[in-house]
Image 1 (tube, rainbow, N blue to C red):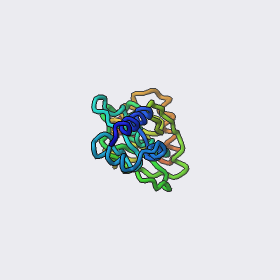
Image 2: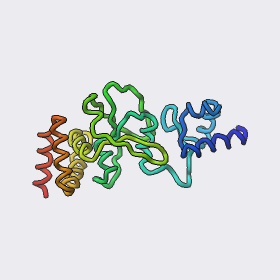
Image 3: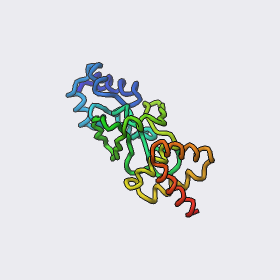
Image 4: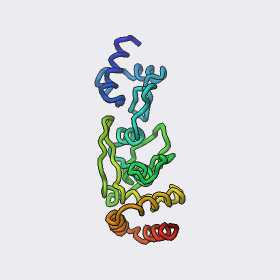
Length: 206
């Protein structure tokens, strides 16, 4: 590869804060052969189909890069359950699998370089209590704190009993208004009984 081509590609990625899509590279007249060569040489990482990262061995990837990369690969997806609880500060250790919500009708493939657990939602449940997180590397969608706790309880079989207990315990230490919002959301989603039972169990273990 010619030096000026390498410099052009590097500049493109630096302008994109390290990330570029195949479509953006094509628009800049970077060929698929050149992209493949850069991946093979360890200069680029293919984060998913049609998306790349300029490897930065000195600084590494940004904080919460998994969430950022999901946002690039599938902008409609939403970070949910235990992963969202981690982002909101209810658990200290990052879950081993990133929990991601998509519509049942969403057939987008999300083959990432890290493990994900995909949860499928109906139209009614999917769009409620969303927030957009903006970073200098890109944005991603995530559920609010109360919604995330409720979903973690719903998916407790996937997440694990101990992890859900930690989430509930930390949440119960917060103010009552958040508890009211949690129960209101749980009732709206028809999982009020399950959520209340889990909260009662957490109260009993104090």
